Image (cartoon, rainbow, N blue to C red; front, top):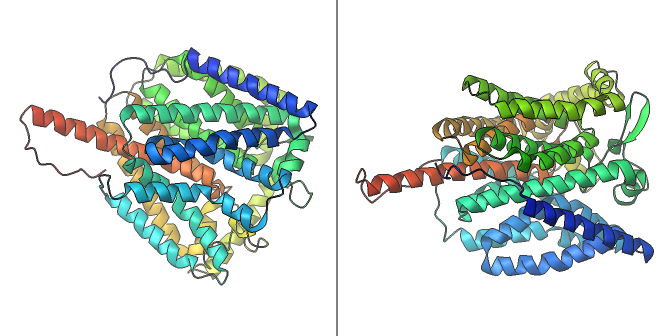
Length: 498
């Protein structure tokens, strides 16, 4: 066991007081900005940058752990901040593009400062990942548009850089606990903002910061039983991205709740607000991810014959919260219409997937990175698209690209299962269970929407994979130290494969 038997408090009363105070300050700032005739989001973005930039600069010099944590906190806010800078400040073109690369700069600085001083240990999974990255680099120079290829490669390599970074930053056990707690609080704030946007901000906010050429994207609206509904996207560019981000956090939190002695009252408020944010996104692929990931958690619990009373209570509470909303908004009929392909967007997914399959069959070697899917709109019009994440990958990198990626996912799932069965009950085992559920759930949801092309979503997922492997490494090191003290092994040891 890496932790003692004390209950893990996810969000204590102290944190809740701080969060409520923070939300109160935000409300006052928004009211003040309205009274002064200024854009509230411009005021909030300015204050955010005034605090964030000096803190990031300090942490890069003196605390790599803090710098990494700030980076992961800022990821889901990046799109909205950049959109506010473009819309309210009018900073576009080369300067705007340069500002938007700040995440990559921070990652490269951390890598350059840590890669030669931190212990390195590679596994077969790491070899597969590095091979996949190298393979995609070749495909990034295939397109005639170098900028499109480079942008596509950025989307491939960045999540894996986060995966490797979390394992060389030298996080301690408590650091990873605090990182998880911080990300859950961020998810709760995103859920609150999503609900506020869904109920109050509506089309005004979406038209100001999400519209393209003055037109509202179809992805921000839906029809539920004939009612026209705006889908919340919070700080993301799409409601599906918000939904999948919160789905990952919900599944990991569920895993921690099931396998550790976390207090129910410390986890209920974050779960409620993240769940409401997920619901207000009306992202059916994210709902599917929750169902698939939840099935993984339930299956492993049943196989272990450890169905806990608190899980049953939590399920009942979730149903009590969900049922009124489902009936009030007609979501049940909405889901049925989706399954029967009577809903417009659902009916359009099948032809999109079939067209993508035909294109992939016609181009078995792929056409190059950045030329298919949502990323291709960055430097031109959408030329080839599919609603399936794997088909988009196949259109860009061919059959071999899909095969390599699926091999990586299979390898990660196998290793997570081995780690899960090896560890004792506790926070770390729960996080690994949640990571396993999130990995399977997410890769089920992207069958119908390419949400993993959004960096905020993919980096969060691979962050938890990296943390899970790091926990395994630390637990083995703890075991070796104990065996050495007991005289059961020589001093010289080799870092174990994860």
